[in-house]
Image (tube, helix red, strand yellow):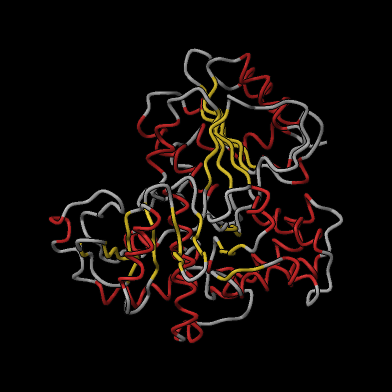
Length: 435
């Protein structure tokens, strides 16, 4: 039996020493941090989820540490607890909270409970729901790798009680910040900016073009940039792939064919920004289409890949059955899993696919629905309710055909490019570095 009180004391040294998190810097923060900080004021459970090593645990500790400094609340009213598979015992969260609330927390102040990697605990929702409903003074902040709400054992729903926040790869702007590289004091909005915002934006454009390839290859994991102990980004990412295939996925899907799953991920990674069909993939992979469909669903649930549908199909059934485009939500993983190095990105066509792939990841963070358009001789890389996007990592040779396609669709045309911001009569050139 695990000694929970001993674990509590070990993991909450800030109760005695406010400087108990010397390894947690407040200098480097994800752009989501101010939003998370505001969420601390709300009653609803704040749930951070996303792939392994995206800095979720670090974010929790940053929130705790900054709150300790700024708020006039006893340190004992901040509980941090990191779970693991070995702690998955019946009612472990309930027992933990009973000990904490009865022996440590001061009921006269608000109580903050940070539960890290909570997905390892069966029926965690049920246990948290009870305290959420009965203890009005507790704010829960939880995190989980892979998919926190995917195929979890639970009898209860947290519907209406939880704000789900996805923590994904660093954006290029975050990468610049984490590396202390120069960036403009103002960042233009993709859909709402004026001509005056162009001034002084691109004094470092040549630097960004160079750094962007480094970012695509090994700049999307916070720890690779910030840790002095990581000597090889390639080994670091290989370890993540190994953990994903041999631990994370089998933990929730015990009957998965690991070699097939790995080959499927490699194939999708190789074909980013291209149309794909599970029917066409099944034969070379020697796999049943239904199995591949299940694997794709898993990859989409855990936010490693995303499918983009052709907007010309208005019927959902036809949209799902038709060919789709595949995009990786982490180019570091998708490039490294196939053994590609920086020289691979020197090929203009390959770089163009990665350029488009990154654009997809950013647009999906800005718009609720992203699809592509392809019908007869007309096409557009991405469309939203109001905008048509064409992605060009090189020269735009024939803008007129895209102007006509955007007009046909009734949408405003934006070219995502590697050049400077420019506003034309019929379209806008917007640099990828500021998405």
